[in-house]
Length: 222
Image (tube, rainbow, N blue to C red; front, side, top):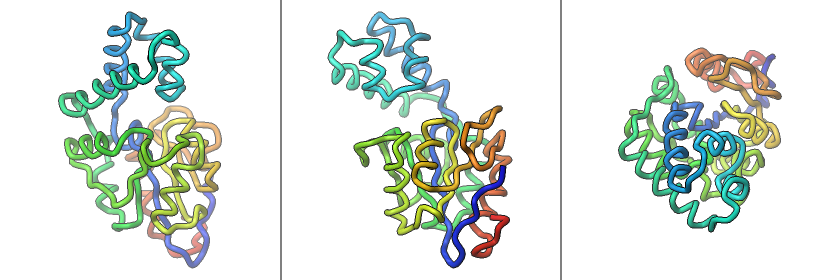
């Protein structure tokens, strides 16, 4: 597929998801949920399969309806914070070079995680931080709502049509599409439904992302 060209005469922006897009955190997430499940006497694999598809409070409602959801969330946050301090993280190939090559003020992070964890992971993996981060605490509606990506665009003073979203997950792709943005998928063997372009890896996508961000205004190749 080809991307939608950005509007002529305007600056272009790139909005990145974090986990699964810039940082490989799958094993960390699985380990955190497994520890949480064992604490509540639940099957780790069953819990993780639900957690992959839903937000935490929805996960608790499905697999631990007899438990206090706020207690469940506090336990999960404790485990996630500990993982940021002690877990092993790796950035996807090409991530550091890509982010360093983008112009300051032209990109942002849009994550369902929390900013302090993102900062901890970026510090440990050597990734640069942007000026704008939209995290779970910044919005009342998370992905697949368009709200997170629309808030990032507003904070960058960007029009949605001038933004490129880089995502790996269906909920994030839907969020970007609903926000009226161009959406490219990365780090998946099969394209997520709806993406304008698909790349098997972030490294493969990197030169195309830079071309989108730096191409002359109105260039269809962008």
